[in-house]
Length: 323
Image (cartoon, rainbow, N blue to C red; front, side, top):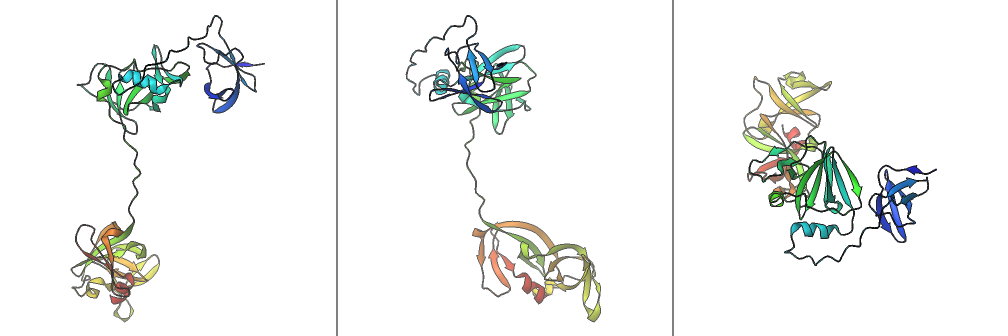
């Protein structure tokens, strides 16, 4: 026994007939009377196919006359109707208020109702601006509504509130668009893929009056300010992650004043030792276009200039040994 469908299926014309979509599944359409596109057609599903049955008293819709050619001078409503062509429309249901039939080709997306910023200078029929992935001009209508249907009309984004949406065999138009609203609507942004330029993460520090950077991936850890204690052979030590590390002074390694005095100092764990520095400025990704390599095997691996100021990029192993 065939099951009666409460809503018409979404139809797609195929060679030799129609295919209908119900709950995301595609089924062949049996349309013996040619009523698939008629208004008010009754639909049934027998488990194998969708069956179209003309409603009692229904008559075939009149064949549309050939529309006039569309030019740049054609009004917006006529251009939108021409762009939709024979594609069915989408009916926006708004509870007790009158439905709105829009061109399905213009429907960009459907989102939960957003926060709307009122526009005091907007023409009648405009509620304000909302965000739906991009700025959208939201039209006034019966409130509250739980959905916002976003339409792209001639490159501009306009939103209409609704409770639900249903496919409709009629094409839809833009007769619902208030006068002056389209010119106020934001342009739809063009989608341009931004490729991040190749870069190197560097850790910037200072010691001995010198600002320098280290390849961040070669720094085992950054330790908070610690006060080392005396160890064997007069070597100062700190504990980190259950290990005892000898502490060396980056200021002395760089030929400047010592970092360690009587106060705690931040430290870098490099190659099994802790190297005290005056300050750790932070991590920063520097484009490879702002890094120039130096001679291999020297204390300075490269020079970078992230803000137009040259900063040496040191070899972490050299810093650990030199300290």
